[in-house]
Length: 260
View 1 (spheres, one colour):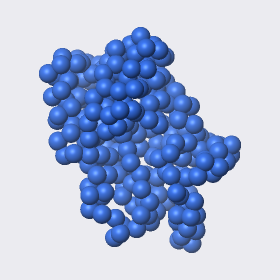
View 2 (cartoon, helix red, strand yellow):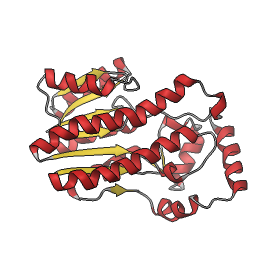
View 3 (cartoon, one colour):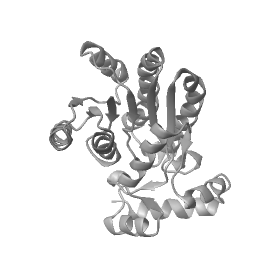
View 4 (cartoon, rainbow, N blue to C red):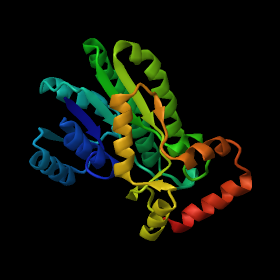
């Protein structure tokens, strides 16, 4: 089995790569825009778990990134059995103060490249009658929140796109799963270390290794199309659509104050 993991050099992507190698003995095609870190991860996982690892440096925010990555696989006779669309960015910023480049980067990375990779590799999987696609959304898909307006909107796209794709591909032997976690204990959101530790202790935030273990189990051993870890998240999600305006403003002040 060969698994393609995007954003594999750190955070959640590194956990996907590690657990696929360790627990599923999967060979790995690791993709990231952090070239040195990616090469180190690939070497370490190969040495530790004996799987074949390929480090592929790529900027997935480029419009033609998906086509280039797919062409690379075809040229090198790499047959991808599992596609993990994990690469992502996060920034908290008023929309009219955000540069066009940053907006384009997030839209391309979270939507265009994800959709294209699913199309290109999904077609191959359908031809073989077997395959797995996991896309990373977020509980923020249900949030109307100033400051993260681009992030939560792209995550909403991933969520609905993945669910729709599940209906199309499941009858053809390809399982599509979209994960919608709440806060995950990584550096992505820029919170101070003491707040990250508190969030984990309160079970508001989930460690990435725990999230990934659950996600891979759901991907390979169930036919679910969506999954959200955490009882608190399930209880809170219906309320997000009806959050009073004053609470939204308070949340924005809190997040802005404690980011660094």
